[in-house]
Image 1 (tube, rainbow, N blue to C red):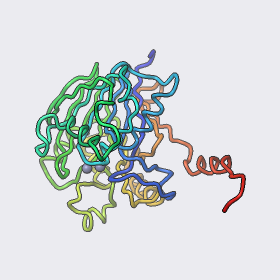
Image 2 (image 1 turned 45 degrees about the horizontal axis):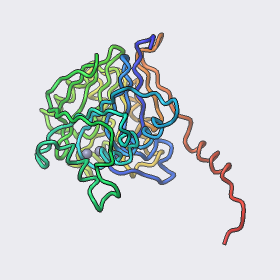
Image 3 (image 1 turned 60 degrees about the vertical axis):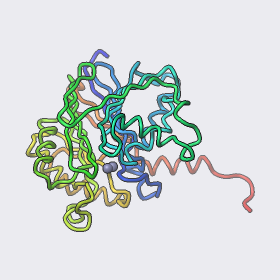
Length: 315
Ligand SMILES: [Zn+2]
Ligand SMILES: [Zn+2]
């Protein structure tokens, strides 16, 4: 930890439901999960979609780097943001310690996230119940407008425009500021102001880009999501440096996401489309923001298929 660097890893970038069709492999099919390792060595996980399972497998591997306490921010309770929880292996290990942050849902009342855990793992939805989760867990309620600290990092939460509510998070580290604004739709002036405040001067602004501007205007209006065009406009207005298009539609094949990215890049200098395995480093020497893209996933799959060539008879 000689350098004050923040490392942001994308474990799941797909919105609404996981996808497995080959046409979506390059950007990836796991639902939202990000991991931010802060300059002061803390691990902050953003959302618990299916990408969380992969993070957990990596974590359990020998020599996997592990912080003593992990902080997990949950934006809201829609399936795609919580469905990785029962499959997150580190939650079953008593040595681990987790600190969860989420809001009190009016549909669930007190201890909303705790209830989500219990319900997800209640019989007959899952084979083992909560009692087998041995890791220490702390739950903290946060509300839109709250500001709190995780280590040396300042976290701000704001409500976004989404059915049943969703929190956007701004995390200010000594290496730069990351804003995570998934699941939001334009059209509500007050909540749009929240989004602009979150994004103000951010180094990395991750925004919902599920739909095309055309879909958003007509067929998908009111579904709670946004487009690259809104993201670009917001990034410009708020003075954000890099925009990351996030929460890709399950019906958007890689080529559709390519088109969305191309169009966004025509209007804004620094844009990425989130892809599984992408790692962004903030505060590295010589360059404020570095993005490392994974090798094309299709190439990896091709190699895997070759190695797994079948022997024997087919029937
Ligand atoms: Zn979502
Ligand atoms: Zn949602």
